[in-house]
Image (cartoon, rainbow, N blue to C red):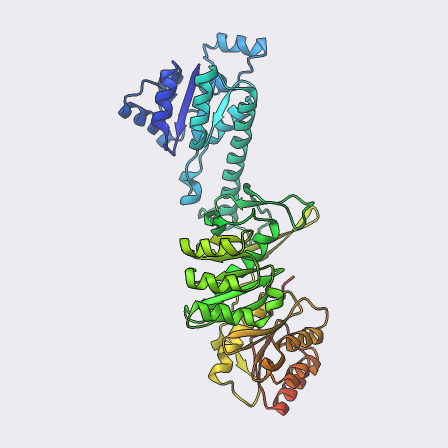
Length: 512
């Protein structure tokens, strides 16, 4: 048995090579892999000895040779292939161990691997006879199988081949994306790097979920190869398995909580999400106060929702949460051991998650049957300092603070949306309505007396004064909205007549 080793990532290389050598496997190695084996005292043959040709062009050409690729690609079930091996004095290669230059870590022309992907694809194509290893995580299992059976099974070789093709596909996708975004000076560039003509994505399944949006649907989370997701580092401490909607809603809650905290100069924030929309949100001087204020907005809807807190949960806070409505998911930067025990004792099914900060994303992708909709991510581009006061009355300091929170909550709520906030907390949210007037009516109905003196946000402009009039009648004193309607002057006149303040952001935040 012969094995070719040519790896950039040398994690686990030496023990694996020593294990192969102990099985009397003849080892062939190239370049730096050969140097590493030599330093460790592992017997092997250098690729240059096999090919009879030295490495050249700074290492760009070393394995691209018939002595290597003939040994990998020969179909041992075909007599003519075996004759070609004999005629050309080529020995078959039974195992290829290869991983590629780390292109995504530092994209450049020199890190575009050529020989590596060629060997990987060749071995994967001929998986009926050749094993291909691209991931050090598979070394132990492969070595164990060789020790027990002397060869790899057809099933193992096929499984390794699938991983190998996925590996090279992800690699090529990363290169194509880099070039589309203007990588490599002198190469042609896409007119729109965010929405290039060809969007190359490679996805790897990160986890199988309990089920999809409904129990009869299957669901999984995939990660974009080469991209970082905070979900890759989430730890589940308790509760049943996560479903599609658990992740979807928890992601919305986690991002909103940290957006609110960032706007409040890092003060603790809490967000309670139900069906991807906030039913409560607040910032306060303590996380306990933030949670209590968020829950107060709509405790009925909070049942079965997602609780996201920007501060670690201790035993005292866990006791407070446990006394409230049942949450499907609780997510925080950390949970103490005592907090976990308290929450588990009260709500065994609740998923308890600790997570790092959410990453910033630049594109959103949504399926449309067999098509995909792609857009740049909906970031809040306009800062409050750029907002324009369009009424005669200027906002108070508290109204400014409440409008900022209302704007954030509203922008992350399904359209049409109206959000009301007062003294740092949401008091009423109207979500997902076909009519903006109805959204306003729902928000003030939920707020009740808390609408008096509240700030309101609308995710799009008021096309008519009627929606605004609902808020004014309920006692709302400050409004933030995008502006841009042909009736802006008429709407502003209604606000002036009522003596309230209103600002325009110049930025719409529809959410579907």
